[in-house]
Amino acid sequence: MPKDSLSITDNRTGRTYELPIQDGAIRAADLRQIKAGADDFGLLSYDPAFMNTASCRSAITYIDGDRGILRYRGYPIDQLAEHSTFLETAYLLLHGELPSAQALDDWEYGVTHHTIIHENIKKFIDGFHYDAHPMGVFVSAVAGLSTFYPEAKRIEDETSRKNQIFRLIAKTPTLAAFAYRHRVGMPYAYPDNDLSYTGNFLNMMFKATEVKYAPHPVLERAIDVLFILHADHEQNCSTSAMRGVGSSHADPYSAMAAAAAALYGPLHGGANEQVLRMLREIGSLANIPAYIQRVKQGEVKLMGFGHRIYKNYDPRAKIIKLTADQVFDVTGKNPLIDIALELERIALQDDYFVSRKLYPNVDFYSGIIYEAMRFPVDMFPVLFAIGRTPGWLAQWQEMLLDKEQKIARPRQVYTGSPVRDYVPIEKRT
Ligand code: ACO
Image (cartoon, rainbow, N blue to C red; front, side, top):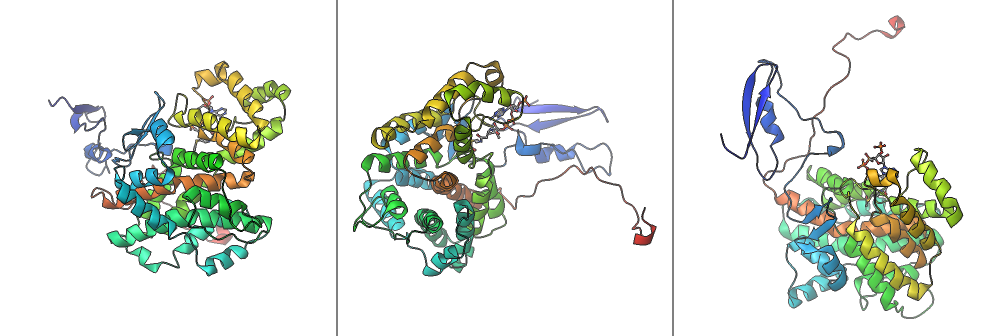
């Protein structure tokens, strides 16, 4: 009997099966040979919410949730946050290796020269109501881009894929900033190619009457670090949406609009917005114990706490805390940080959180920084989406090039009525 195998005895039939184990996994399709009778479809694995199912093999991001480890292409997240830039990290995620100096120059040039959006996309954004949530605008505008680049449908063409990757990484900050400026009624600020990726984003967001916007270097770097921390996180809800929609060979704009829609939810990338609203609701240190009590009674969730994968401190949250201090030196302290720190201190001592391994996640502190930098709360998920764009694209491309992948199509366990005859309406009770 091979050592790397699993023996299963089906007690319905008494038969025993040998399933190979590769990389710590059995193939769910191997279960299909296990049948109770000739007509039996074969055994399925039932896994709501994909708690224990690997949907792909991936070489992009490694997470060890129990030990609080996150690596992109093998590089620890703290080293990338300290030494890399967002665009270099994006290159790494997409190409698998850090770029040479020349490759990085070419890459940055390519992204920088795709930042402008078609004027009709601007008009499209104009059509939204004045109080439209910027994430709704963002999701729609990303989907809308597909109509401007019909060649994006040629997903098997490497050059076409490369062009759409440049466009998506380059244009997401423009769409995000335009969505914001429409919301506040300010004229759109066009991209400035003299600035860095994040410097230009701050320019498009906050430029007022000055002839040339000069981003504060500390804030520019802080946003860059936050984008690095958000750049990929293996098979999360939005990435699974990107892969799932992309598996039907939809163009990358349509697939990424789906990914961004998945990110919008409060249990995923929308959590950073909810954290801020929660901290404001708590309002003062004195109100924290009562709020913790409500969490323990199941009335509310402690937003920004808990993670499907991390059952230890989220390594990104540690880095974000350091970034917060640097930002507050420039902007002044966001008073909500005191509530957040105290909330964390109490939660980490409380058996409810300790026994469930609930620790602060990436969203717990990011919103406090964004707010200190004058981003409105409803822009937070959009900021997350800009940072996650290279990860979504790297995962999409990996999925397309993976010979084992096909259109994503889960099975179900049917629990409805057995077959029955149609009842005319006059005979229904
Ligand atoms: N506050 C209070 N209790 C919580 C929280 C929380 N934030 N998160 C989990 N729990 C409790 C659950 O009620 C459950 O308790 P029980 O065993 O008594 O029923 C237990 O902890 C396990 O939680 P699950 O919901 O089973 O964990 P799951 O892995 O399904 O959910 C999730 C993970 C969605 C992130 C969850 O922790 C949550 O809702 N957190 C708040 C939202 C949030 O911060 N999301 C951002 C995640 S990071 C990201 O997407 C970028």
